Length: 122
Image (cartoon, rainbow, N blue to C red; front, side, top):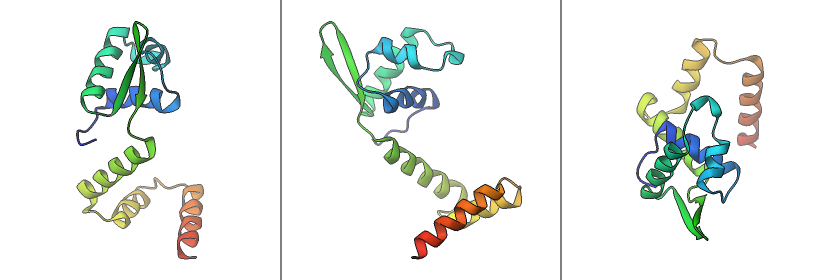
């Protein structure tokens, strides 16, 4: 998937990553109601995701069933890499330092990072 997906499209992807295949109506029913989207809005977003090859669809009678073509993990990896490249010169350490300097890391976060580092070392 070369083309980036928008925040709105990401909301639709989250629904499909949780459960697929789904009809457009199923997706519309599962999108966060706080967004206030109509079924037509969801159909528009599904169309955009199809054109970006982020999802596929297959006919099921008179309706279509939609499923993701990109795995959630692969998407998160790509977005994380883009963020670190864009804001921190491709290096992870400045990101962690940035969060630590602003007291954004809880004791639990620090413990998780320490455990991850121990695991990576072994």
